[in-house]
Structure formats: structure tokens, C-alpha cells
Length: 363
Ligand code: ADP
Ligand code: MG
Image (cartoon, rainbow, N blue to C red):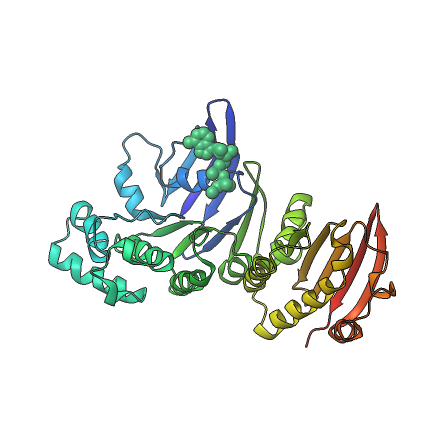
């Protein structure tokens, strides 16, 4: 359906896309992942001509869209894009946001555009908000209106550019649920996302982009469980772990816990696992206050889906090598909680740091 060959894009002296060759077939869901600044957005923007490629070719259903004679508005209608920042018309109601394009660009009657608009709002769960202006909607609702607006243009392909990155964590799932529904209805989709669990679940194919290239591509299983190349491996490892630095006894415990919860949500860990993890971390951190004035603690949580394991690592400067057995630890209760919640506890010394690694029991 979409055939991209040797696509490159430069901004002045900077080469952002190097030599991209890829095909997207009808009905396919392609997830594009990778570090920021590697050209993922630029790639999507080249596909629907929001950016003009510097060289290479793009064919859509056999038609060369870089041909001067191409009707750009038509291409954008067929390959409609959903942005991170919604891009709704703020002076128009939800429904009017949906009818504008079909009336002006598809020549639809107002009545028909409104009745179809209501159908699409219903499909994304927002029929009752049809009169509301974007300002009166939550981020998740705005993004669902943006998706409905996209559908109202009868696209063949939808390009999503980090559709949930600007959202409050509580509204991410409602947007993902709508996208998931589109994938199950056979829509052709290319989605740039940091929601790895989601990508893995809905995508047929994953493109890992790095430094302007499609560095590795494969099925979700290949990319997430068994990446072959070095930078892919490093990236996948990083997204499965969470780090937090504690550098003062007055650190913000609530902010840290909220970040841990958000991480658990992204990894789709069950609620009881999340609670156990928070308890384990709370108890582990109880060990350190006597040293916190002089020490910096680096907390890392590593999740391996393959092994179904959660590892908590605390690296510290300034604390004794094995703070659990330092003798200055009167809280036996805390210690026995830690032992009960873990399968393995290890101590090691790495450089000038002491590392305590706890493998959490999965219950
Ligand atoms: P990603 O979406 O993977 O984070 P982008 O495609 O947004 O990456 O950007 C890739 C690189 O291209 C970045 O270094 C960015 O600064 C640069 N870039 C993007 N758009 C422009 C532009 N319009 N002018 C100049 N540089 C740009
Ligand atoms: Mg981007």
C-alpha cells in the first residue's frame, strides 16, 4: 500500500533521515519506536507530505506522491495524521471539528457530515460531548475527538505520532483502547509510540529507528524479546527499567511512588504486583536514612517480561556494603518483610558503590 524507497530528509546541513526503505501493507499495524530525536516524526511527516523528502520515493497504491501533479490535500485525506498535541480547532465544538473537513474537502452536505460526525463521536465514546469545546474536555477526550475527526475523512491509513505522550497518565488507556479498536477493525496504521506494552500487543511489525535509520525491524516478539542488534538491545533494556535518584533525606516520596506506579502501569503489571513492589521498596528505603545525609541512592527497577521477574536494585555511596546486616538496623520487622517479599537478595561492590539487588517474589 505504501512503498518508501531510499527516503532521506535533510534540514540545512543536518541529515535527519538517511536511507529509509520500507513497505506498509493494507491492514497492517506498524509500530515505530526508538529514542527521541531519531527522525520518527519526520518520517511520518514525510509520508503525508507535511515535510518534503530531500530524496527517494514514496508510492501509495502505486501512485508516486512526490510527483508535482499529486493532489497533496487528497494524500493527506487518505493518510490522515493524529498528533501528540491534538491540533483541534479550539473555536469549534467537538462535532464542528469533525464536520469541517468533510464539508470543505470532501464536498459532503452539512446534514450528512453532522450525522456521520455523530457516529464517529459515538464510536470513540464521546457522543454526549458533541457540543463541547476542546477547552472543556480532558486530554484523553480531546485526543479521542482528534481520532474521530481523522476517521471522518475516510482515511485509508492513519498515522499516529505519539498520541498519548501529552496525556495525563489516567487518560492514556482510554485513548489506547480506541486505537486498539481501530486495529481490530482492520484499519492500516503506523504509530510512533513509547507505550511498549501496547505496541507489542497491537502491532504486526515493529520498526526500531535510531539515528535516522530503520536500524532493526521485526515482529513484536523479535524486537521486544530477542533484539539482534546492539542499539536495539540497549533501548529495549532501558524501557523495561525505571530509575530514580535520591540525594537527600527529604526526597519527595509521593512523587517517587507516583512515578513507580506509572512505570508499573506501562509494563501492565497487575495491581497486587504493583502494591507488593511499592511495599518492598518502602521497606528497602527504610534501611538507608542513617546514611542518607552523606549518600546518594540510585534506585532501579528492572522488569523482564520473559522471565516474569522484577528486580529492585539500590546503589549507594556511603552506606555499608551490606546495610541489611550492618547491625545498625534495629527494625527486624522491616527486614523480615523484605525477606518475605523476595526470592533472592545479593550484595556486591561495583566501583565505589555498594549494590543491593533484590529479586522480588512473584505472588
Ligand atoms: P523524533 O520524532 O524521533 O523525536 P524528529 O523527527 O522530531 O525526531 O526530529 C529528528 C531531528 O530532526 C531532530 O534533531 C530535530 O531537531 C530535527 N528537526 C525536526 N524538524 C526540523 C525542522 N523543521 N527544522 C530543523 N530541524 C528539524
Ligand atoms: Mg517525535
